[in-house]
Length: 70
Image (tube, rainbow, N blue to C red; front, top):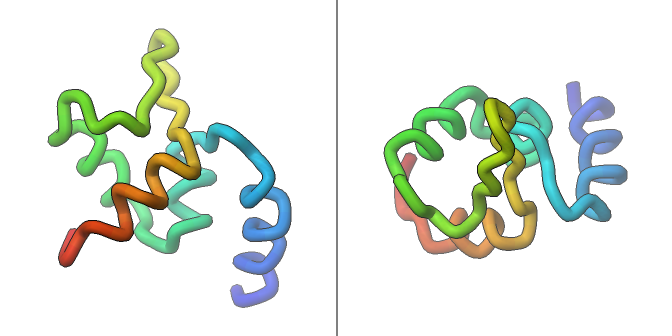
């Protein structure tokens, strides 16, 4: 499991956008990310692309740093 997390960290840190699944694994928060996106109408870290929900990695990191709980 730790090895998988390291692999995710290596490629994900260089990507501008992550899918919900990639971001969930990268930040270690599971499917709570989907609920977080749905409960924040304009969080500033989401790009609406039809049914796909790309997450702006750096913007989400800034948002995530300010949270005290999920």
